[in-house]
Amino acid sequence: MIWDLSEEPQHPDAESLYPAIRDYISEFLVLDHPFRKGKVCPYAPAAIKQKNIFFSYAGSQTIKNTENLIEKSINEWQKKKDSGLFSALIIMLPAEFSLKSLLQIQRKKKIKYVKKQLMIGATYSINQSPSIHCSSYYPLRTETPCLIVRPLTVDDLVFLNPKHYSVLNRIKFLEKFVEKFEEKKSERIEKQVNTAKSLILSYKHKLLTRNLVISISLALALPLTFFLTKL
Image (cartoon, rainbow, N blue to C red; front, side, top):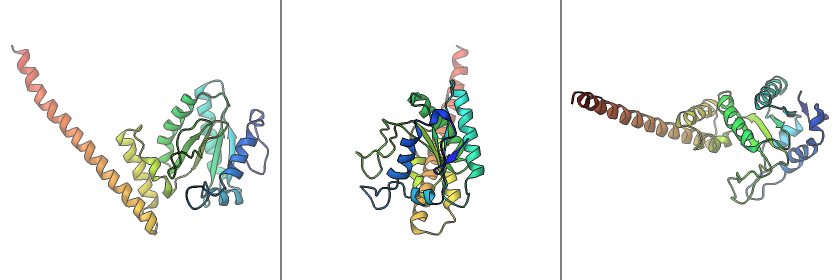
């Protein structure tokens, strides 16, 4: 079950966790960003006004069941949200949820959902990911561990090129970014799209070079192996 800001939590275990997360969304994210123009989250004010922010709770005894609850929440959100407006789903997890498991789930789901032009991120109390505008400002810290799912935006390019993903996954992420924004007419968007295209070409060249080196190595190794077996 998911709910919006005008409703009470639809899960009893979420009742004590929800107020802090609600305030994070409705009060903190709409503040002026201290290190750039605009709000902490540029999309939050409109999404709140349009009642297009949703919440859910995914608490379970096993990681597998937790992942199933996450999937169900996202599916319900995709059916319920207004597709023409910016929207987000905040999936709360138990306060004691393992940070390692949270990040493993987030990274796994990101591969799946970027294909659908959605972004999924994690917030938690000791999140060390700083604002891209100030290395000592940490806007992704919440008392309760959460996964936040929302549509891919033009500002997400920086999050589609992390080194903890394979080169092939990074190419796929960037291709989805280009697919979504290539037809948008804006100087800023065009610049982001061109940057993504350049990264794609660079990574494809890297893959081609690596595969060529492997092929040459194998071609040289096979005759040597054959020769050694005849000694």
